[in-house]
Length: 83
Image (cartoon, rainbow, N blue to C red):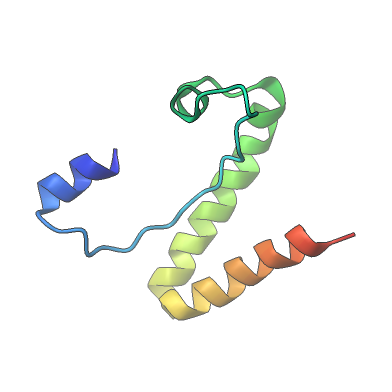
């Protein structure tokens, strides 16, 4: 995980692009939640999520972190506030 990357790089100063996984139900341990297999519905969404993450990485490389944050964070906020 992330601690292994930090140990190998000997720093925590690197860019991270996060992909949300939702939140577990109250009765599910978060550690178990993040390690469980994808549901059928989640598996169907995976290609689109990976495509968006790839586009974000490409935007960071081509246009910079700030532009990527403006594009992808603003998109998430719009989706979160949609009726």
